[in-house]
Image (cartoon, rainbow, N blue to C red; front, side, top):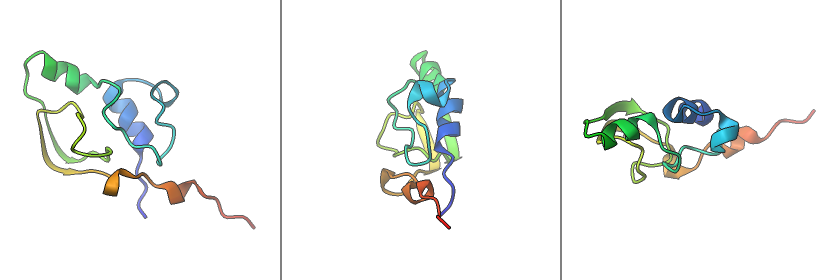
Length: 89
């Protein structure tokens, strides 16, 4: 399973640290709840498009874009829960 990097993508989009947004690990993907800088730009009347992988929860959420071109979101909106498990000796 690939690494999702959800906390860093949420931090870049919102301008906030993971402890401020609640997206702590790869099991929690950005779900559109915390406003993003691109949503604020869109609300000012500008067209904001994304191209390629976002690794957000879903395109059904308001991710702040006017258009998402070939977005790659997390499969079934579930983050990398398995990655949270650590092998024990």
